[in-house]
Length: 323
Image 1: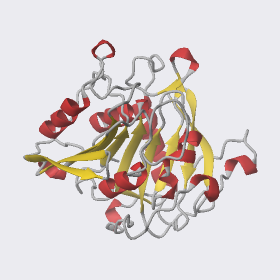
Image 2: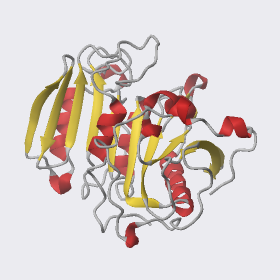
Image 3: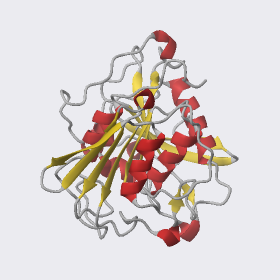
């Protein structure tokens, strides 16, 4: 693994679990079974780069730029069993650190990687695929380098690498599902900004997706924004189900008073599509204890809990893992 970023002191590098963890009932989100040895990463058997249960900032060079990311090891991490990996992408103007603080993702039984986007328009961080992202940025190549680094230094389950994103980060998770379906088992998006990305997707391997979106989201409107190239979310999810070859659905259920769940099944290669609609929800992360002017946050469901239940069911086909 690369050395931790030198500019930060030890107290700033190791973020306490009290600050970053959200308790999740272990019985409802179990750690997937350890895979066969052939699908464990080359880092299995190596001592971890920092103490399990801690979150530390590291850097690597990609595309001639120094890139920064947070790496969280679950408290029970051991180099003798392989772990799922969550790649977590913040929204426009955000950071890995801020996402770690309120998303609850570091409370899941997985290695969690929270990278920082480069600065794009208006001096705000952003990810590839959006019109405001840095010109010429190749965050797909950065993600490949990041995965290579993680797999070389940690004991990772190469069949259970997932991408999670908020807003612009959610849009980038979709870019990854298109660009590197041989590395990404499934994705989750919250308030996703699905701009046209212009990439040619691999039709041979559909990627499962769970998404969350509020009907009163003023930033990425549920009914879309034609001028900005943002789709209607109901249509977008139906199109995903069609592209994934789903033959059943959507089955509609209600969760509490304000969440509608739509699920498509019978999909090619088990690439299910699940969509949670938050009635009156804003541009927010369901279940997060944060305040701001982005609209109402539901507490009916917790996004980190729900997305893990979905992601933990999916893994790459045994013959599709990347190098």
